[in-house]
Image (cartoon, rainbow, N blue to C red; front, side, top):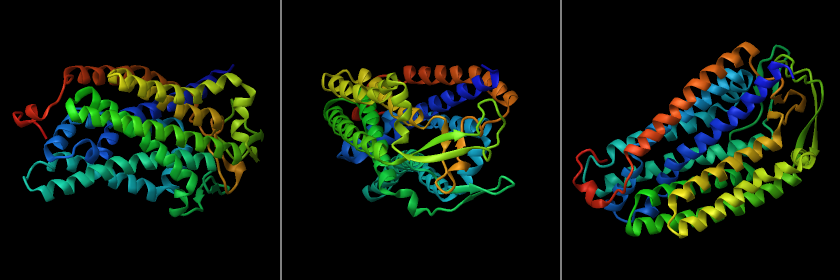
Length: 377
């Protein structure tokens, strides 16, 4: 196998790893924000919950940067097409995340309950909206994005902002926020005590079961919806020329890879196993194990999408032949090789300092400790 093909496959897998890291780490913090008003019924309890993720939420945003940087460097055609065509969605995502640090920093600056309730709303919005957009993006990739290229490789997006929130994409978005609430519930269980810990366990249970129902419904929908089949033209070791292939839309085609390699059914099985085992562990007080099982469920979710779509990355519903795949939308072998070397250095560094930060900030957070901590939010 040529080294260029190996590099493309490695970067396809790395893209999945980065998306899983984003979903698990960022989704955990956003799940806490989205569930804040349920987890904390009083201002004192909400302050306690906020301070459970306060030492980590900003550091976890590095996964956004890593994900965006990876797409920019390894899949530049996808970066250009997605970020230009889905510009309004990117702005909505950006605006919702801008108010996130403001909510953390300004919420407790004044004692007014109205003031604090306002910032609680911003924390809910900045937690729920990005995760819904994240899931909806996955759903739209499965449906196909309405774009095409001109002869000079200038891409044109022919859809509308409202059309991106179609029923299937909304279901995927709801599943995304459900898994985020599960992960956030596990985080609060790890660091909470008393009634807050009990509510976190209930949130984790409800969100996990809801995620499984939505995952099942989305799976049945994918079975019935048209998928994309590469019928010729795209050479695995070829250059980034997405206009040289032929693609057909066939009903149920997204299940072809699973039919060809039945062992791949283990990937969606991780979602059911992770969530159900995670709920069982949480109910027995094993919240740390439940957190890792939630991460496994996220890996199964994103892995299922990637496995079903392979080798497609961004299908075109306007002109299927202009779809972007692993084989014809990547950077050069030199770029992929250099990026792999840097990734091999920096990803372990990110993992080490993230683990160190969680170790240093371990332990329970209680309302009493917040009241006597001048650095608390």
